[in-house]
Image (cartoon, rainbow over all chains, first blue to last red; front, top):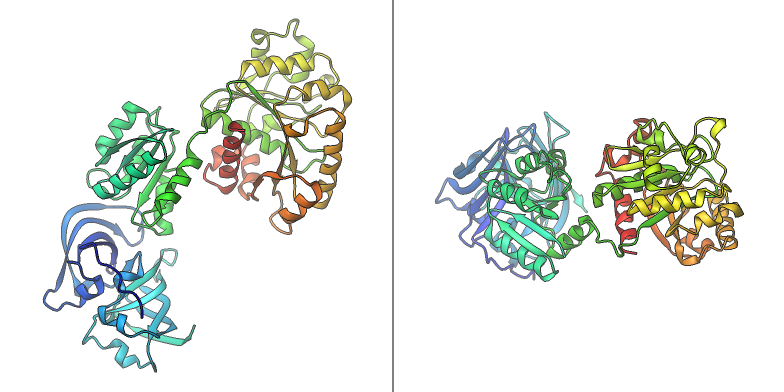
Length: 174
Length: 367
């Protein structure tokens, strides 16, 4: 069984992506994992601090900085994390032996490749069900902007908004 | 020990970095915003700066751009340290003038190692150094290495560095620096009545990097004879004038040249990773021994002039039976630099080749 990673921080600094923007910000997680905060249906938004805005066609350049912000969860296309820990929902620690599978999806303006963990037979309907979690975890992923293919993002974990998914393809075990 | 300035709006990061660097023996100043940090950097002239990217009043990118306009900050190593870790963030940082870019997932020890690589090395001795670069066979990239090594010394130590082109005729150091000297080693030897610093100085030409070049003759009227008895005192005087003198030595070992070679603090024997160069190196080592050059003065440098199919390092070491001091990676931009009449260190200081040559210069300073 995986070790439960300690949650000593109540904040996480991540990259949020909407259709046209990259937003680097610190989000209050109240000592929970970000994926669990995103699934909390009590609030429709995330409290952000130290927000740095970049346009998607020049994602390295910072066009604006703001001390505070609110990000509407439903408007998030995907989130890029610097570590896998924030992407693992609490209950996954109790379901080991998940298999890695190749994963591909398109969302507006992006295609995302990576690995996806699932236990048992793959059923796309179950994967896309938003009853429990609105965001899907993709590991070792690469996101490529379809309008500017030279704009790419890579990271150990992505959280992809299920409601933005246009097509989802799952491959065999890796 | 170096004076390092850290700028980050995150107090916990500031504390962690301050602790790590102080434990390594450095003096550390910390600031929580870029505006104050820039003012303090200009006033205090640190040896290196670590700056966060995402700061409210002034981003790290803007800090870098502004720092590079200040005369005393334009050459200081600046490491950008950020939670943003994408390749595009690194490109943006380097374009804004940063020397390097590390993500905040980098361990403190790795950050410390990179800082150590970038800090100008403290010279091991106050005695002036003369370093000769030599290969018995052409095509090993000896001249381009000599030019860039001289530039590295001048740029990192911020002191004038002499470069002497010892080619008998038609040497390429001036071409690679974009200079048009009006004199040469042989012309200096033929016109100088006395070999003194004041008399020699007008024969050298200054490059923007701080390198002072004594070039090679371009006409047969002024061909250099390596057995000229005045060559040794000329080189000795130039060595006394500059903390560092780099010599691009021609592809020959003549007995009459031995007294001049004895002046060298180090001889870097340049090898390109191919069989002919390896054979020539083995013969060169014999030749240097015959000239009475002590083994401890000789260091081997592998200069990868080939993009592919190079001999492995282990094979080279097995044949020459000596350790390799440094390996310079194949650098696709070197040809561009040569054809642009610019040292690679100025054309693209962050290229792998330039970084390796700077590292070699730092190594030579401490040996």
